[in-house]
Every structure is written in C-alpha cells, then in structure tokens.
Image (cartoon, rainbow, N blue to C red; front, side):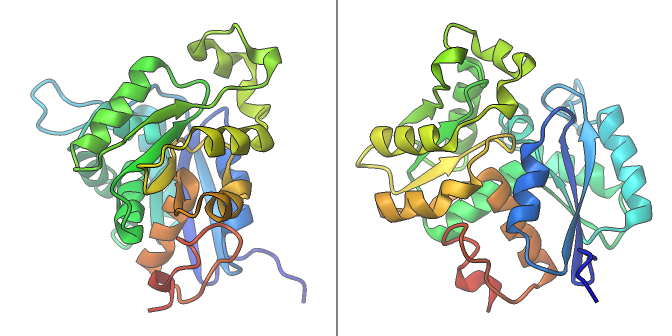
Length: 266
C-alpha cells in the first residue's frame, strides 16, 4: 500500500502564526516517515501567553487555548508553541510558564514545549555558546534586541546579530511592514545563504537562524559545510526536541548535524 503520512510513530502538534506557510513546509520536509505534523494557527501578537500583572503566571491567548482544546482530540505526543518571538518578548522565565499553562489544557500524555526552549537545548547539545544570530527581515530592532537579551539571560553570548536583507524589491519598507506586505512568502534562500556566509564573525562557534517563519531549512547543510560550524534553525530545533521526547531512534539526513546527531540514536 502507498504511504499516507500516518503518524504511527508519533503525532506532533504545532502552534504557528496564522499567516505563515514556512513552518508546515519545513516540518513536513524534515520529519522522518511515520511522524505526522498537525498545525493550529494563532493570530495573537507576541507573546502568545501574556504575563499576568503580578507575573505569577501567564494566560493563553484565545487561539492558543482553543488549539490546546483541539489537540485534546488529536492527542499528539508533543505540542510545540512554534513562535520564537513569544519566547524573546516573554523573557527568561516565560517558556516554563507557558509550558505549565499549555499542559493544564492538553491531554496528560502530551508533552508541551516552546521554540525558545527547543533552540536553547539544541545549542547546548551541539556545544554552541556563541552563536551568530540571524533573524528574518521583518523582525524590528526592538525584537532583535529582545532576542539577544533572552539568550544572554541563559549564558548564551551572541557575538553579532544580523537581520536578513531581502531582495531589492523589498528595500525601503520598514521591517514591521514587510510581513503584512507579503515578504514572508517571498524569501530567497540563496540570498540568505550568501549573507550568512559573508557576515558570520570569526568568534562565533555556531549559527542560529531564529524565527519559525524564516525559510532556511534547505541551506542548513550547505552552511555547515561552508562555515565549518554547526547550524541551529528554529523549526529544525523543535523537530529535534520532539523526536527526542518521543524516543525516536534514527537519523534525519540533509538538515544539519543536529538531526543527524547521536542524540536520536542513543
């Protein structure tokens, strides 16, 4: 019989930005056979679970809460809050607070996680402490600074940050307006590859491509070969973490050392 992408090994639920196409495309490209991916779309601004006034915890945005309810029927093995910006804006303790709030609404057997936590665990697994941070063109200066502060809070020293510079047709448009104008579905990975190779500082011991809407999975291997350093990308990191959680034994080739590492075969 023909393959039907049934999740007989694992089902993974991902919460993604409502207007994005990249996360699902990259997850399906990278995921091993027998692992299915199921998306719930979120329209809220970052963070998707705002802190309460007394910072005693966070409250899930309506779309996120509704997605948790929907996943109760799907019963995924892992549910990923796949939004880098939420972790960056939420701050150093936000991931844990969001995971607790999600877990309260998900089936007991579903492990909740966030993209911020997944990226940190992936960097640690590869021994990367000084990543060159690369972010999408639509990230504002404030968000780039929030990302650097977020990683610094965990002892991850970013030597330099670079915001992807899109093709000339997008020049002159403010970062915060690019997303609404459609640049998120008009990303050129060849251009991104050239920029990362040109801008990566010598002192960086790895590269971090942050942002689940950032189209970059196809150049991870090429970047590692050219720069001789490990690459962590947002969607790749969350897939790696999900596969680790479910205990999958195997390797995923073509998308960097992280997914081809011994962590998935131990």
